[in-house]
Image 1 (cartoon, rainbow, N blue to C red):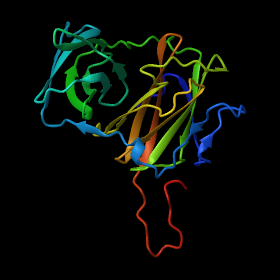
Image 2 (image 1 turned 60 degrees about the vertical axis):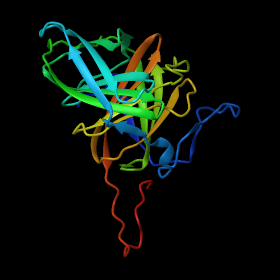
Image 3 (image 1 turned 135 degrees about the vertical axis):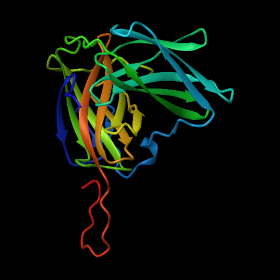
Length: 276
């Protein structure tokens, strides 16, 4: 797992009172930090590789070309309307990350992708139907050019401090990422919304067995953005966040450790709770 694209200072803190005040203006809306046990609203309810769906994907271009062209079709048994489709891509070591919204034409979804190195890449196809979210996945072995597709100057001047609430993240409990975003030392107060959201967050565990997609419940435009999620598997996780500013998508990347909830000992005088 690699270091963050935007300079990040990750601050682990204990859960503080449920309201995080973004300023002293009492008329200003404040960010609400959920209790770690308030799980239900923050679980990503998604059908993973459900029956009745088939993902058919093709890749083109020369084997040694940096940019590869992809197209895919989603075949389904039921006549459902597909909405808000996303493609999330990473490599086997979680060093590489791309989030793409493909174009639809001639019955297929299409996109181009720069591949930096030869590896097996995970493609997570995420979309919403009339019945909820669906997540289809596919692993493809691809030969890369050895070049990094991202512009190294793209996020110059941007910085993100990240508070993780609570201090320790446990499975099946709410974890909140509180991002404090700045540009050239000044707080960013004019985040450009994408589909009404200030930020998008994607995460894989180190075995690529659990993928999570989340967005903030409140979208106040910055400089603070809070994204809450529930992780179901223990272990290290790569977390990738995106926000749009000055017309471009900016990335924040970090690694967290999700722990299994401690078993309660009925004979213990004190019982450890995830928020402590």
